[in-house]
Image 1 (spheres, helix red, strand yellow):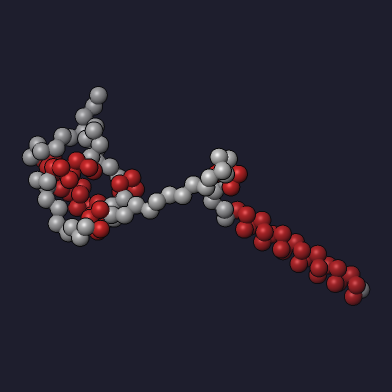
Image 2 (tube, one colour; image 1 turned 90 degrees about the vertical axis):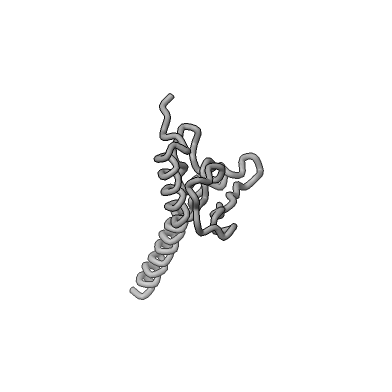
Length: 112
């Protein structure tokens, strides 16, 4: 009986190790084979908030040159995940763009 118990214990340990390995495989967020097809790995540069980098705390709605960077040609405001601004400055940018639109310095959304 002792021999059977040790075999069962060893089998249980092997099964638990396999489960851990399979759980670890699920955590991989990219496919290595797909990324290494052309021999290069894909690395993404982290976006840095322009306003934090340049210590800009006050946004003026009259600064059209700056605000146009955050508006598409169609007039839509670019989301923060695309332009890299932090939440605080994205709210300020949005507020400034809406004020500039209100006094006709920037266009509203245009349909084409």
